[in-house]
Image 1 (cartoon, rainbow, N blue to C red):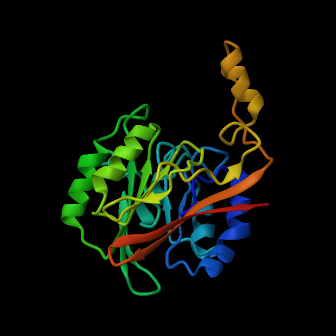
Image 2: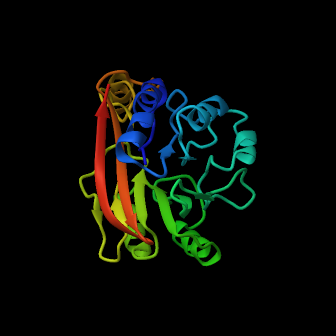
Amino acid sequence: MLGDVVGEPGRRLVEGHVPRLREETGADLVIVNGENAAHGHGITEGIAREWFERLGVDVITTGNHAFDVKGIEATFRLEPRLLRPANHPPDTAGNGWIKLHTRSGEEVLVMNLMGRVHMPACDCPFRCADTLLQKERADVVIVDMHAEATSEAQAMGHHLDGRVAAVLGTHTHVPTLDAKVLPGGTAYVTDIGMTGPYGGVIGMKKEASLARFLKVQRAKYEVADGDLQLHAILVETQGRRAARIERLVRTL
């Protein structure tokens, strides 16, 4: 799974590395968080289609920026592989989970959740995960936990330990050094880290971020371009549990 793809630089990393990474690792399933893929905010139908049809991405997850691009609701309704958080209100366009089969024949449930701490209003992700696991069965379950608070992400890891194969954090754009397999057999990381330009501030040009902190003005954010890094997590499973978790970093 790739962490948040940010803007055109992030898309270049996806195009330049994902097909090769799949071949090198022998990955059965490729998941990408794409909520910042369009100019740093949201995703477009064209980006999603290119990733699915040309680059071999199996599932795209999102988060609080899922619906930032005008008209994208229609794509969420028509494309089941493009997920929005499952704990959005029930009448929200699209789906928050999908079941699909890997090349090796395993049935995988991919679940997209969003935290509530310092995030837009949404339903409880913990109860949402419990409800989905009671209703849906699969050989392997992978969770994208899109959370601002590291404590909320870690709590979700422990809450689901032994019940899912992986809880992989996204959203903060900062990779954390806690990738591990929890005692119950769940692979966990607080944040995968972004796929994009590390030369700015969480993917945006540093000047705008500095202006927002130092001046009484909200400077316009623009995607940075420099120090391009792809951050991903590779999880190997045995049965329903994780056997190994590994960080992958690639550059352009």
